[in-house]
Image (cartoon, rainbow, N blue to C red):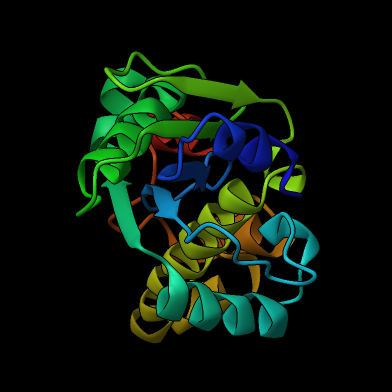
Length: 200
């Protein structure tokens, strides 16, 4: 998990930010990105892509990362902007915001899959959240941050089951939308929401 980081450390590059996002697939809510700079030499045993971790494990790593990180930046792009610019562009905006919200400027950025136009040297790594500790840390921060937003939404609208599906298009979620209608926050350019908006 530290191969990319170690190669940079060898070149005397010590402030490395990992960047990842969560929430490209849901029908509701924002896309959330995180940028995390971990201290050189920190090994977080078992940390990997947040999608492969249980919620309990994610929360455990979230606390470790929060406690040890040199800097953490979060970027949140709303469903309105997603509808305006498309999810791919919105993801890039969220990642850029996360990087800009770091209190410490990184010397190099490791990004999960996406290519960004940055004034800082960067490396895009396919499946980076399973190959780089820094990116895995960012994926955990982004996932826990977005999930907590879904828990808040669930308290407000318990009939939709957000705490279970987190806004993703599960069968139960789509049935709830058909039964109770659309609430604020749905992405109007995503199917099947798009079709439902047309019907209204």
